[in-house]
Length: 284
Image (tube, rainbow, N blue to C red; front, side):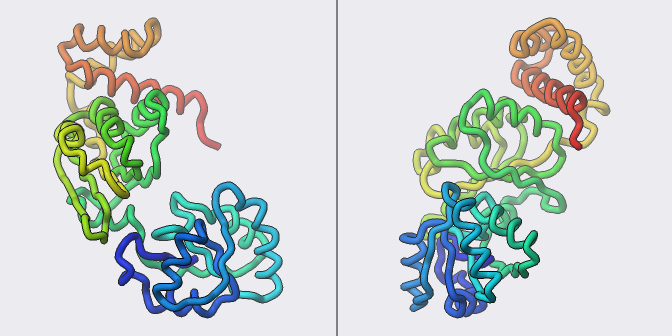
């Protein structure tokens, strides 16, 4: 499992170069993209495609070559393979077959962004890409609203504005966050601020919605509702109304009854519904 640069070609480690040059075959997410990288370093190892649409089909043949004693390398278009990229199916099959799997570590956009975001890093939750549809995205954010760990997301440029608006509405406009764009590349940019500010910035600055994006958001304050009587009262009213009304209507009415902001009531309603759903269907 060989990590490759996320932008700056100088980040390919000597060990990674040696591994790619010395193996029998390289499985790559996009062979055309990876061919450019290999040519730059004078690596002539053959390439075969391994992506989300063919990984299950290709895995048996790759396992056969591994079982025969060949050394194979897996790379993605950028960063560490199998992290929001193809590779998990092959790794699981190789592990089940007793084949040794070795990590050749290196760049990872999520870790790079987290290291410079200016947010807590002792504990974090990597979520990859949120759902593309707004309703599903807000539901997932509602489930994550009580999470106290720093949240790390990838996002497509054309969805950045809507994603930040949904984060601000669901998690709270005051949450600290950072947008890391084009990491290690010529136009690298990091913008830090509260979610409400960053959502507005994404509307004003079109350059933010270009290139590869990582968004890091601080977690919820631990025990915030329990320590805040007003928050506890909002939760109490919401629980009653959610049993009788649709979520959006319950949130609006609860906000009026307790004097809370509409977006805060909506965020708490999503979190409460997600918590109730989780208790009804515990993980096994």
